[in-house]
Image 1 (cartoon, helix red, strand yellow):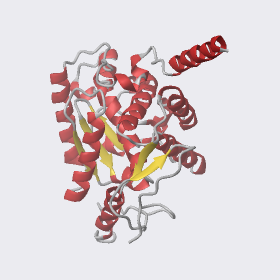
Image 2 (image 1 turned 60 degrees about the horizontal axis):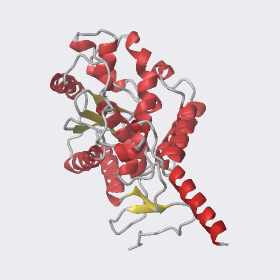
Image 3 (image 1 turned 120 degrees about the vertical axis):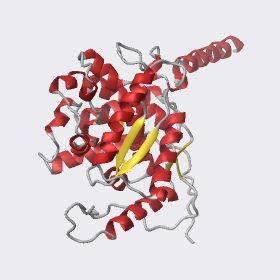
Length: 329
């Protein structure tokens, strides 16, 4: 009897060890965040030159785009980005700005310069979804995809370094506004970089406490948009993995490499307040302004009308009773 019990215990310990065995590839192990060089590869740019390059390109974007000059919106996005950066492999300081544009876009530049369109904020159903998009862009910068791709293509001209775009999340408005050349040959490597940014971005939002399933939710939303309005997405997306494959890959990465937590942050009252603030700013515009496009709110989209006590909404994993922290005033 004792011998059988000992065998069962040994088997259980072996199974437990197998379940917790870290991935052989450090890039797939969230426990290694900060202790790995995800930007390793052929690169003709030092970090200092990369930052200088990003600063130059960011200035072009800022000069040719409508930057949201609102303290509440800017402070919220910057704080969200900095929290994700602290839980990433990034080795450069980050600057985040919001562009007033309706496209569901985000834009990452070499050296830690990040731009997010109001359209991405307004089309996100939760802070976790927004965090997933920003985490993906942070992953592009942390892995130095911009200068690595430029180096691979032997592009020494600073004006030819591409802006990094996120597949189905990113449109072409910011790229056109930036006035930066983007030779078609530069996209030969983007599929691999996009897949890597998906893996890393999932880890960053996960380590920051957000539900990684929100990343999947957003890609499913983009997939539905592609089916509902075919042809509305630019041909740029042909160089990226299709949304359906990204959804499947993200689900697999969550299952294989992210240990289940008892609860995750889904959304916060600050996120909803910022959405409302953006809508309010849009409503103040003069109707028919030639340079002031209006953001339209889709049925069912936008911030919730539910009032809360200011604390984040937490989601518990299946099998655990849902913690409802929201209170009606």
